[in-house]
Image (cartoon, rainbow, N blue to C red; front, side, top):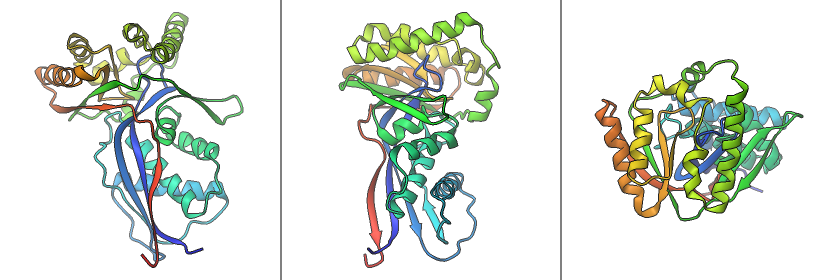
Amino acid sequence: MEQPTAITVRVPATSANLGAGFDCLGLALDLFASITVTFTGAEQPPTEDVGEKMVLTAIRQAYQRMGKQPPAGIRALHNVAIPLGRGLGASAVARVAGIVAANEYERHPLSEAAVLDLASELEGHGDNACPALFGGMQVCVQSSSANFVHVPCRFPQDAAIAILIPDHSMPTKDARKALPDSYPRADAVHNTGRAALFVAAMAAGRFDLLNEATDDRIHQHQRAALFPPMFDVFAAARSAGAHAAWLSGAGSSIAAICAEESGRPVAAAMLAASESAGFSGRSLVTRIAREGATVSRVELAGD
């Protein structure tokens, strides 16, 4: 069989945590990046592109997991509209694309579970990597045996997701530093119940419960200093018709779930609230993507 010379992987952006589901809940967004990994066979100069570096690192880690040496001359065209440091899973997109491309090139020595394990390990948790791989809404946790396990969740097919993407970035390392090393038991119990409520409410279509289900005590209040208008944006989204709003991943983006007809008013209200506080950006309306990462094109030497 002829060896590919380039593999293009299509991967969705993601929104993680979903309020109270810190490091375990996430959903795929109908915003896709296409990353092309090229196998040139010739040594390549080092890249300065942050996204490409993450793709190439993931490829090297995938080959290490396979017990093989990577081929020489790998490049990645990482030209995507998912910005880094905005809480939309850009790093998971890059890492998933690299692992999936390497696995495709080597004719799938890694199982789906092994791909999830590696992507989640590189990310530090599975809440972005899992929906990026499999699509939909996912619960993903690291088991006592250290591998990652996940369950896809039911979600309303007609729900819209309005997103505010500030120009202001919140690097994940800074957002992590804002969190304490321990929490009171009451806060842990609070979040556990609301994360479970979110999954159940989404499955049942109980939009009236989502605002309560996204009430978080673990990370959003602690990170508000990094994006001061956060709670004003939440309130503006709800006033415009959103069922609930949350800090997407480590931020700075904010996501809100709403009825399809409310999507544009909610997105506009979120942007207005952010701009009134002096934080520029843009907003958009999308959906929960059913599909995760896929190989969209394989180029052979004769193509």
